[in-house]
Image (cartoon, rainbow, N blue to C red; front, top):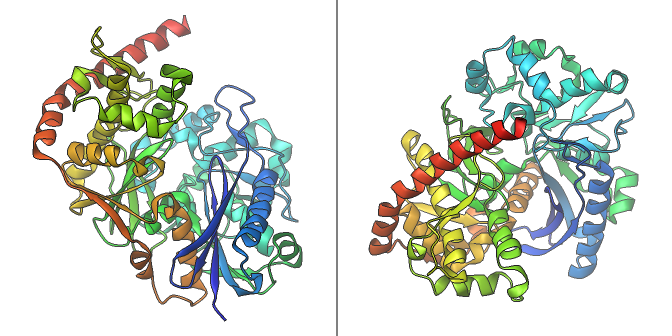
Length: 506
């Protein structure tokens, strides 16, 4: 009987269910979206019930569309969006209908109270938590305590996204090292929770779930879960990992120095290494890898693909019925450098690698000769140049492999891959895995945990190289000459953002 592997990718926009054969080839996948709620300024919430419903529907749709035999599914695991906080009672039921997700920033007062006791630089160097601090789980948990004390008093555990899903699947609550490393109270060097940080939070240590390896099989499906999904009860459930680390595994980052660019709504560059890449100024954000003994360290911009989508919707309006293919054709008609037009894609503010979190986006250098083609080309180049600027942070601190794997929706554009190759000055590779890196990573943790694979080497075998873009020396030189102008634009937009913030405050 041919065994198959089921993987879930719990993302911000929805849940993807993917079915893999025993060799790591994706047989089929389905996606079900869910909404994000914005009940107040800085509040970004989702309903765990929506996650579960999306997992159930995507699984049933997957089995129906692929005509796969449910009895062939040997194991499953999930990749989960990071920094979510679901308080559950003793029976495992969520105590809140909707919960803060990774991008929620309501807990700034709780972060400030914590850092009155803990040195922020020492905290960052211990945890590698380089996002804005209020995004991390412990501070959202402190917000529950300060604002909904009755709720937190009933909580038996506070779980992350895929850990709550695993509880629904098996009735058992665990986390893995990769997800624990985003709690804000995890010691990267010690591979455990940091007692001092938990004490400073004022929260009971019992709220944090036990940590096991990502490949650890935590149990079989419960009768209720098996019935809901349409699967047999003997399916093994591995613990899985946080999305960043599952994507790193699925993107072949299984050895020191391997690096990839994820070109999605937000975009980042991540490298795997035996030691976390830490810098108290630039603050790369670090997660423990799902691959034992490794870490995945990343730099990012907050609006990569979402900036390109904004150009499509707000700048081009209804004149691009063919969508992104039409935009690629337009950009190809504009020369390298877009006739001197620059675009800063900081439409969602700045990451820790930017000059200011309040940086604003902009087109700069506009004159009457510029066309829509130049606007689109400048958008693609600006996103690439901004990622090239933050790539410099990693290059200064860790040796990188000579080629860059491109994943995510934007990686499908040959023109954009060439722009990245020219901006980065390195080969940019597209493989068959494309947007499925996180799903493949989750599937690999399940396959290793269930004994179908002896190790993670099969991940490389699952990648079929489809295209390699080599840097064009003349283009590399043009982008090198444009780099100082782009850096000036970054600094000026950061200063402008700070000034506008002061004006808006009155």
